[in-house]
Image 1 (spheres, rainbow, N blue to C red):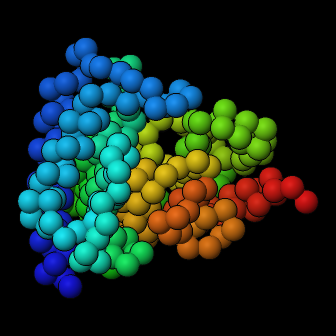
Image 2 (cartoon, one colour):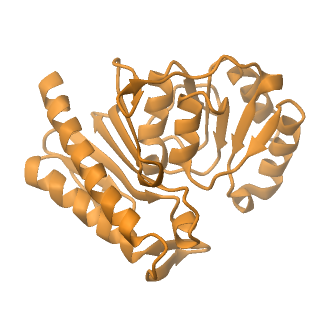
Length: 261
């Protein structure tokens, strides 16, 4: 199994670096933007990047399954499945904001074993492999040791999705933490938690391609990630908390209090 994962890690890293060049060369230039739904946009670059990653995976591992944001699912015949977000932070990319990245995770029978995140603008490559730690550009990273009153909290920016609940949660948590940030990119937010630049991220509406690599990265950086009930996250999770572990229970208590009684 280790050799199989290692081979796939090498391909994932190669794919992320390759498409990083596409993203950098395309950034700030005119792109074709289409709507997938209510304020949910996609560009021709998303599709180009996704096609490049999938082609490389299929070339080396044709039996593997694929779940990707912009394409139909491909079933697995090997037990391995790739989870891909070609551009996390598409709206930032469209608006020439340099907060975007590519996320590639590898799952085997429901368990995420590998996560690669590439932030091309800042030239940061993050790698997490289950049981083997979290790394940025080859150097090991870890979460912070800050307590709640010192904490930087990253909060879900899609407040319109569950406005009353999310604003109530934001209000209650704002009183407990030092400051609040919203980046519009899950992979950016989770890398910041993993390397100790923020102490927590709360997301209500993410999809598996948004968080699969990033939550593994946080855990391998000695942080904690759960759903809103405090249970371990999985590929079907939607709302979750990722933290340095120290602040986790305090955040969880606030989120639980938002449920109807």
